[in-house]
Length: 364
Ligand SMILES: *Cc1c(COP(=O)(O)O)cnc(C)c1O
Image (cartoon, rainbow, N blue to C red; front, side, top):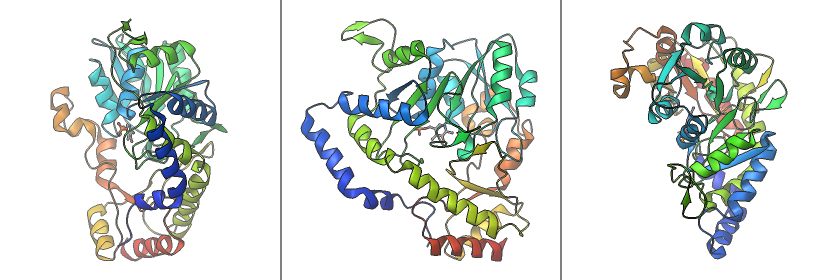
């Protein structure tokens, strides 16, 4: 079976460096925040071209703390994509605000900025574009609209490590950029991890306080904070893996380029990449009306595939109370019925990549 993603291979490639980094933290006596987290924050900010980075416990918390730092709470509305991983919506709900979905451009899968105007009300406070599958959303019109309407922009970049938008890395286009280091992400820890990046010192300071019980000075609590700190063992692992992120992104780009060329003559809808961005290729997602059939035939031929995501947030039981009936967000629903993610990762061998493309051509 060709696996969708070989996570053990990411460890095997870097085993000596990762083992040493972890052992060094174990021997340091510093097990909460400390030097390793501070160094990773500096290196991650610098990699992203942002002034500041703050490490947090996971990607969901990164969005929650970003919303809190911008004072979003009960009674407020936040515009989110209708097709995203549910975390984007859950963060808005967690601060007591209401997620207001906006449909995507069906070709890029990212939020359609021409639909923002119609979604804004007096209660709207922020927009959260998601760089879905590692492909940057079109930030320029989103930022222009947000500035004119007085709205904050929080980017959900959980899938976009190393992606560029108009020749600048994702990391500080919006007010706050939120990252996940979940193991399967392009920059993955070996457990949970997350961060925010920003150019605004006030927001970075605020989130640094919020992640640590609302405290700058031990036992002095300025606000009702969280316990959401990046673990120093994970920070040490992330520092090692950051060293190979560009190389691993290049390998993903080679796989994507190969798939796009090999599958060009099929009836499948392939990823549509505008020339103003360079995706990080977290996922390579094709579309077909016969998604379930194709997935089954691939599986029978030894090729694993996944669906990102089979049920959009508004059709989840968790949002049954949101008043968004099935059929109310038809583009998100159609995409959810048609998308299929092919094996993708820095350790997909040349042979496996060729087999995947061959089997998709045979069965599509
Ligand atoms: C993974 C992911 C998150 C959440 O990250 P966690 O670290 O799992 O909390 C949020 N948004 C998107 C788009 C994601 O893919």
